[in-house]
Image (cartoon, rainbow, N blue to C red; front, side):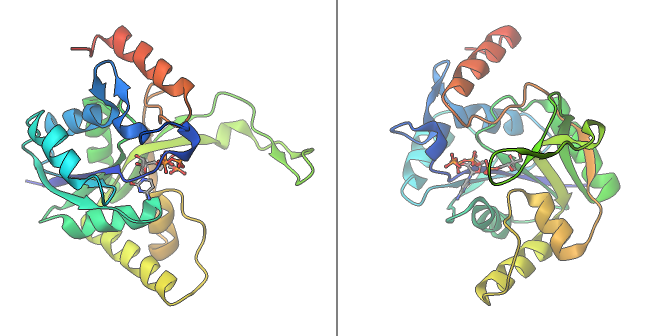
Length: 238
Ligand SMILES: Nc1ccn([C@@H]2O[C@H](COP(=O)(O)OP(=O)(O)OP(=O)(O)O)[C@@H](O)[C@H]2O)c(=O)n1
Ligand SMILES: C[C@](O)(CO)[C@H](O)COP(=O)(O)O
């Protein structure tokens, strides 16, 4: 039997949301945004959840979220780091033991069990996978002056979501390598997701698995209203 752990990321400051509290603790139909991701993993096949939060929010998360909503699978609440990838490594180090790990943005409250199952299967079969959806709009690459440089073929473009799921040893070693390189002041790419770390450090191939157009990341103020509409439509309120 394979074992799975989940890392739920909640250590961002939410600059683009321009809110007085971090977006992951903002109210979404009566519950904090982060509640919905934790609930989805609590009800999934994962045996262990690590919550990574801001260093000043460990007590709040423990008392007001984990204990209050009985998220019994949360085995550790750990402080994150400066960038998302630093927070992920703190989460990876806190995992007690799992064959596979699902890394998820706490700012994506519309995660559901179907997506979790698909990424679990992707990790089992391919060792590295990400939830993704085809891009709907035409994407253009601009030059520094704001003019179109070129238009990539849309059929090759995907919006990348989370969970991003991996064999635990593969992703741990990849993060360890990249963060050691950073510490040694070596040049590393700007890292915006976990797959990049795996690709860069191990050269492994990352499989795209079906996410959902509803699996949005709460990033700017209108996203909260969109998530509210999705929750109402899906009757996940209450
Ligand atoms: N140092 C960081 C930065 C981000 N995150 C988490 O990574 C996810 C995706 O990041 P993003 O949407 O960029 O969140 P913020 O960094 O909070 O937002 P912004 O970039 O607007 O400041 C979020 O769940 C966020 O809490 C994290 O755990 N640690
Ligand atoms: C991991 C991610 O959600 C995939 O779309 C995204 O890259 C996170 O980026 P952010 O810069 O932290 O918003």
